[in-house]
Length: 271
Image 1 (cartoon, rainbow, N blue to C red):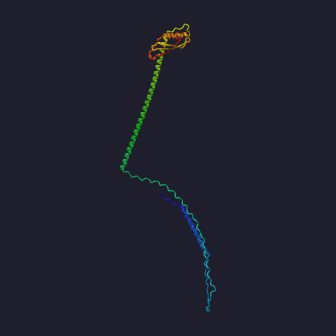
Image 2 (image 1 turned 90 degrees about the vertical axis):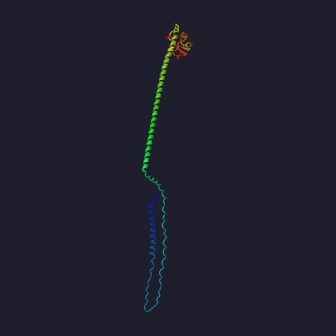
Image 3 (image 1 turned 180 degrees about the vertical axis):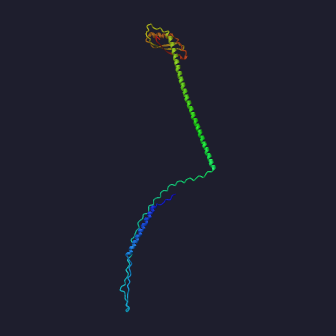
């Protein structure tokens, strides 16, 4: 953990300020002491020489005894209060930076056999991964081929079904055409037999059309005849109706499946 160093600049400034304050105080005290000593000199003693004449030995009394001056009371030095020095502000310690974790210790050297064994394991692992990759690619390719074959089979089946539908449609059209032709031939044979039995009225003019609804049996025998549309000439309508009844039994179709119980027959005098 790193040691927090003190702020050297501030410490030096504080020391200088303290020394200057002490020097000023000492200078002020010395000045006061020197000033008091200079103003109060020590009193000097007075020396008096006395001479007595040799003949007369008289006792000379001193007139006055000079007492030395009393010393002045010492001056009290003014009280000097040192300047208040504020204590330095102590900043809170900064949080120590997080120590990075030490690097892991170096792994011990692996022996030659362990290296060879590790290399062999890595080689087998690579071969296994490559084999699994080839197997996955093979399965994916087989899946794509199977999907392509299935798609081709669906397309071929759709084409075959479409061809069969078209063929059936063509056959139906051909059958319908053949049936229509056979039906038309069947109706024409019936109409031809009935026309052979029609006796036209003498005063018949023009070519009007009369339509009759005929009901027959499978044997061709007529069981009912109804006028569906008149030609406008009553004599012609009656002549055709008699001819229909006279033509019973009617011709039968070549194919029994084409037999129709109800027939709609149209007649014109000039047909």
